[in-house]
Length: 312
Ligand code: APR
Image 1 (cartoon, rainbow, N blue to C red):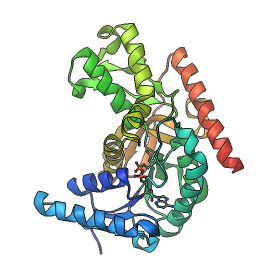
Image 2: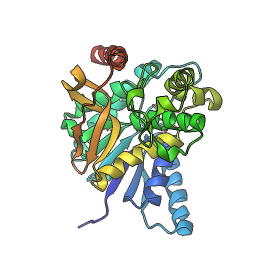
Image 3: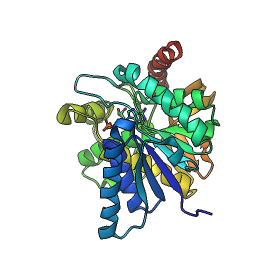
Image 4: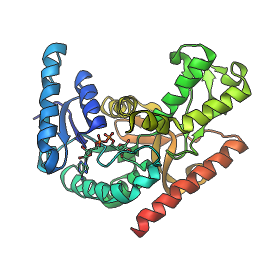
């Protein structure tokens, strides 16, 4: 009986490699880095490099590269980054035509080979890709979530901490809604260790920080020519760890809504408890009227991309 957990990383690119490094470093389990056949050797090479890294750092995780879904049988967690990232000038929604067939291919194989895995989707456009994953696999709603809120909240918290000149450790904030330019940083719940951020940061600065957060991914794409990978990987690993260690963490994740916050049959960023059963609960926090309005706008943007998927 294998006792180590098994983590399948679908996509061995920039985020996939960083995911593998973090999972191994944290000894979350053995790692399989999966990519398409044309990139199997690349995945194998990355896996070998990361295993050798363990010789220096002292972790014992097995890390393997593959393009064979059979190797992923029995995975406890799947983290999906398969697809193409953004280039400067592109929105996440511009990726839908390319990434839709890819997420379908991944979901069909996941359904066949890893029916019991907790799936964390990172591929963009995030909220539509995670919707499609659930639709194709037919997995229980608690066994799939999208990673966006942890990352967007991290970006928001960083900018707040720099502005207030306080440690990022003391900033508590959540960004809800879709992973797009109209995401919803929830200012009414943003505190610096319980102190409302509005009492420490001027209104115009807060507005600028909200705007920078919304465009936070694009800022990096414009600088690097491709999308971010360190913070996205760390954010997804926080979710995977919460599941594998039954931590019951309260994290903003794209979860399947069935009436929560007034929305149904849609994935969108909401506060979730992530534990050993996956998304165990959606926490319906009170929002101001202004925040409700922003969430409505964000949900409409997500729905528009989901509708494209439904037609495609
Ligand atoms: N199955 C598995 N892997 C695939 C498939 C597929 N059907 N199609 C493409 N891939 C692989 C690519 O070969 C590539 O190695 O997905 C990998 C993606 O890696 P990168 O191009 O480095 O992209 P990355 O920066 O990791 O971002 C991946 O996450 O944040 C999102 O917008 C981003 O959608 C993008 C995804």
